[in-house]
Image (tube, rainbow, N blue to C red; front, side, top):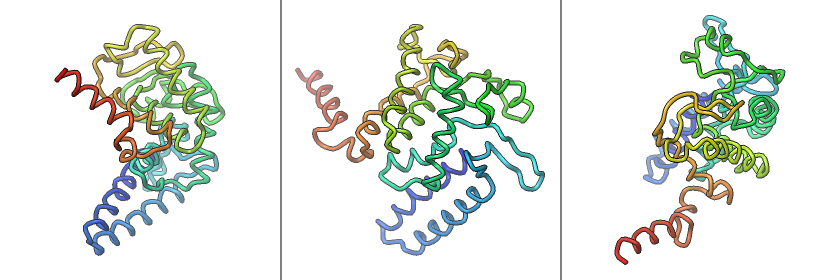
Length: 239
């Protein structure tokens, strides 16, 4: 659902571009790809409370772990002023599940993975399922936390979104990572697991728009925070 949702978000964006350019033929292709891709995800991955982390129909191999950042495709759409790519009622249920699992086990941010019953998923389990690097049972990436927090905010769950973002930022400030920006953080302690100088953490700057439930164009409009920051920077250079 993570990669699939991102692909569908790309299609939504490109479909709008095609319509704007008057390319109806390509827009219709995007529309069909969207419908087919969405149907595949909704029919094959939905569990009733969240989407399977992955499922390979040809082999039957699947993971029942709750992946905390499975709805990134929705955030991309909301930030671009477009409807989400996941079924709306299911996305709401999924956010509740993530809150009760990946967020519940991590005082800081939200763990990448959790068991469906809300218990900690041992890293050995998801390593055995082929997830690659060992991020630790509580590991997460700060920019993913910003995107998940923004998804809650766009969905009208202001308190949850702000609380999630604050918990991640609290760890970064508490342990002095403000200027070294960690790549992977342990959600149980807030301490760095790996990496520094990861500028993808500047995703934090997408949060003000989500807090106000504005899209990217609105967030850059005259008088907006971004507009005021840019003008202040230019004035400082010429002042």
